[in-house]
Length: 212
Image 1 (spheres, helix red, strand yellow):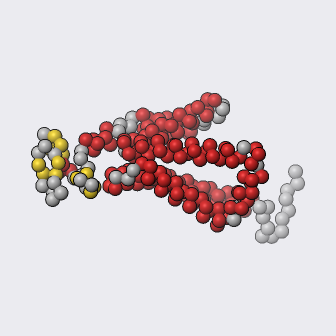
Image 2 (cartoon, rainbow, N blue to C red; image 1 turned 135 degrees about the horizontal axis):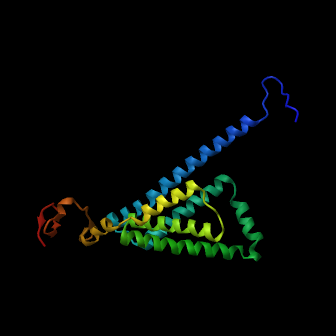
């Protein structure tokens, strides 16, 4: 093949393509890091609401869904995709588009109830262990059923994640279930002084301890 003859200072576009690829990779990594941060904070904040404010499960799911709807509506307005989205649903209304959307929304809402109940009863760490196990099973099933082979690095990462997930013990998350968190209708914090060698003690609102 004949070599490419370019004017002085001209390029064949290889450097530009490489720079664009690096820019996209950097943006993807930043978005993934932001997702992991927000996803990790979600269950922790839910547990804090349950413990500190005694939020009912139904109220938490309702307000979370309203905030999600507001964020989705705002993104559609800012991107100018609100009217095209509505037009798409209207155009495909006879193809079962609206029914599929309602089924998806119903399944997501029911899933939120299960998630909130799990966090309320067992804590955020236990929920994180359950979700990690689910992700591992999804990867294994996808690899086996749909014939998606894993390379050496992916297999090693899957093995490490499996060891961490199955060695998880939620015992330290359940000890507070035996401890009275609330006095009357006002929540209060649990201090280390509430635990003694002879058993669990209950502290008064002024911090005084009394044996049960």
